[in-house]
Length: 223
Length: 189
Image (cartoon, rainbow over all chains, first blue to last red; front, side, top):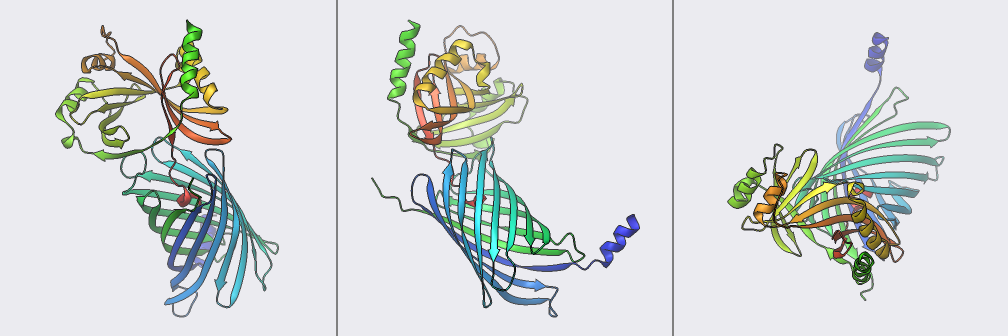
């Protein structure tokens, strides 16, 4: 049994790619309970061992996302929206539904995200995904994160997908270091490691270096 | 008499409007803590690690020591000269005496349509010697003030928010603050 597993591991073809994921998120407060979220994210690869020349820069895609976010109770949030992906000459459409729940702890907080999305392109069958992410955020000074303070953030996400009778599971691990400039602006820097294609012999490993800037504006009418 | 006290408490609660809670807390090292605060903590015989914080809020700047004793969380607040202001101990609301629970519940019922108690702290305010006696679990001849600081997830005007309510054993609301939660975009998107 052990020899079998070992042989399988050695013979298994695994793919590895790595690059950067810069992202900017703008959150606009529309009312006390509603926000409009707009985000732009780009993917650029530096290492891809499926290519002849593994170490080579290549721009992959850009995602533009818009979500409407509504608070449900004191800790829950419902989000729904649309992602527009530009990948070479191809345009990809994705509809998104999310439920978030934030638990306040004595030190830090935990966020749960349950989401579904549906991806549509002109040359592939639609893809349906169900995903769950848990995030723990911990201040590096004090019991809560205040302005001009660093914090740590760890996320773990599980994504199940279904496309034309094929299923897959992707697991993501995301350790980040964050800095809160003030209540409106924060930045996060860290790794986004993704492993997928477990059920096939060619397991895919992706390691992204992510930098994310989040900014909030308040466009509510002043009373 | 009891009814008058409850009515008095409710009168206050009706007029209680929630201000926003502003607080900034950051860790400090013991070497910058005022000596009077250090000696007070030494006299309390805490066995667990003491964590020191500076806190800036609408009430000004204070120094705070946080630790655990007999599995309970304690927070001892000092002014910047090291004089103790109050001691807070985290407790379970259900462990309060029945009469106090009833008084507090009546007050909260008049303010919120629905609510859940998230956290309860008993707060003692007194002079240094009396606070020290309370921490050493000795009987004190001097009087001291007991208040309750309660964090509530409550519904008012159709919306749920978090609130911090400082309330006395008779149910009179002393302070009523809305806790502005940090933006959670970074754990959602």
